[in-house]
Image (tube, rainbow, N blue to C red; front, side, top):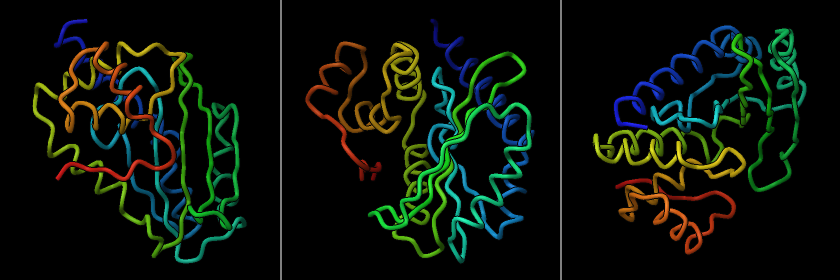
Length: 198
């Protein structure tokens, strides 16, 4: 795919992702439970490509399963929600509640919506927002295209964290699919990758 088409696809994915959030009224649902929502990940950086995922971090002054379920009940009312998964990690290092929702859009494409619900004051509060903003600020036309191309060339069966592309391209100068495969072999990502551009 040529550069112009890659950029057009990324822009269209941004539009479609934001339309999904608007239709679900996700922000209003979480606000009704006393929480605030923040975009993170590829939708925030403008690097959303073939893996249709939307990442939200959500913060509440008081974090409880009851409040989290109340917000998700509102989102689940939408008939296009096909599946919802819940994980209570309040006693884990993350100290969060995770929601993973699957949404089928009007074109028949499935979207993964990952919502990580944390308490205000969490060690991770605002961290991934800063990561995304630093990535956005570090991108040039050339590195943006390199990341979009690598994402486009990744087979749909492979799950690669978005941060891996950014680390490889922005930090380590990777540009081609073969270079990226070698980079991944040398830099396996486990857990949370604590990296952001300087």
